[in-house]
Length: 501
Image (spheres, one colour):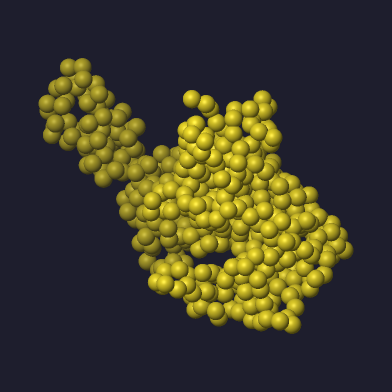
């Protein structure tokens, strides 16, 4: 059986989070439920209307270009992409063809071809029987299109790339990129070729690539993986059948019910779209527009996802913990402020470690496991100072791990005070521990009585322990912890048991 190598290139569209559409003043509102409310003569393509560029949308794409290390165009223009679908009211789409805003760049080690701007289409609704309905609220919304080089060789790598792009768009406030709302849509171009379609250095041998098939409108990361894997298997089976069957260059869709792709149409080429420069929009010289200066846009970039990942890795956090902080801005901010209170240990510029590495890792554990579990998706008002105090009391053996979890639960549930949310921010961990008897007992005199009671109540276990079954000490310690409702210091309790046994 021959071995075939899949090669994948992605085209990803993302609606930009501007206030208005790309070429008119209609509101850009993806949550509008009333059909055909956010429309006007311009985005509906009425004769005699003239489009006007949305400067904010261009700025967003340029920022993305700087973030990925792409080459920013100095000259750019818009083109008409001609095709006739009911959801395109003008009969053409204003896009960019020859002069994209961004060329090259890299995300997640994947090389980019280009990033350009265009306008989105309307929405077709086909579930009404023998007719379709059209909603043009989305028509004309600014749409970023990003195209990768065909250098991806697995469905997982393709989905991981899309996840990293979604993170970047959210970090830059360029797009919400919610795939379930259609704000980010993935299209995969897939070919299957012989082993020598990959060069010995791991690069793609473009001369050896097979026939390309495109899968349109993949609306979740899970579907991206499923659809690509299905198509790789389908094309490989055709090549290995040896019965003359050929792979056809076409556009396919994904059927989520049948879990398979299906043919939609023969794939168009650029010539089919009859591109020509948009006559109603002026050409741009980026360097002549102060708002688009490279210095200004680079200065406005936040810490990017991969930069944060590198910084947190230097703190020796677990991979899962790092990804929690990468994906959740609120928890990341909480953790960074905790680190700062431990002595600047999460320095955003240097990533230098702190002398308090143990405490920092402990704080990360409680934030990414216990706190998330308790919040159940509803953010609490717990403060960095409270996390720091909690960790310090654990480290000093003033509270147990069990006690720490109980204290967090009291804080998150808002029952650690007498005055409501504002008091929750100010109440100390020590106050909660004292009020709820969660401070660890380390007084050997007080624990002596409890140890004697446990020994008296468990004569057989004591006898077995004394006969050599030393592991039973843990059972006795557990009984002591139960007697103290978890407030005993287990190390001190163990010492008292050994003394009395």
